[in-house]
Image 1 (cartoon, rainbow, N blue to C red):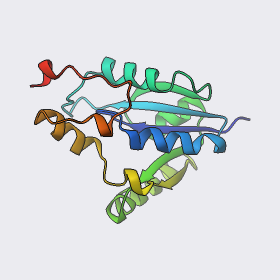
Image 2 (image 1 turned 30 degrees about the vertical axis):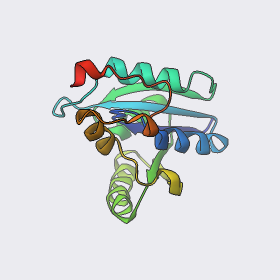
Image 3 (image 1 turned 120 degrees about the vertical axis):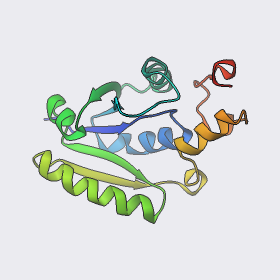
Image 4 (image 1 turned 45 degrees about the horizontal axis):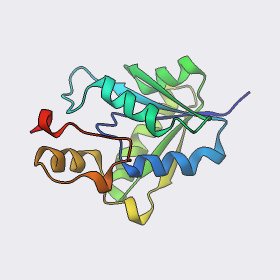
Length: 158
């Protein structure tokens, strides 16, 4: 049985911190599914198609990484693809408090689904998709926080 982990997120947009986390986790799993969660109640800056395209471009040379997408509960998605692990990043104590609660609920709902936490490297601990979106909306230069494969049409945003 292979060890499959899911790294869920909105990836609106994917950041260099996300990429670092996946690359650091690769030796631990046979496969990592970077899965875009879609919540119809949430307003995204970028389309699902853009976010998927960026993920596929970023991880195109990583044979152990697949890109997926899901609606509904993350735990249900994990079960549907045979994943027994969730991968999550922690930047600070606030992230830990939130993620700990979610991991405990996922463990129950996901029939023993385990969450593996990796602490962000100091160089990336200040980066979040929320802050990067604000930089983009304010027409600032977000390139230091984004993988090179992420090209944003500033005309469409501004």
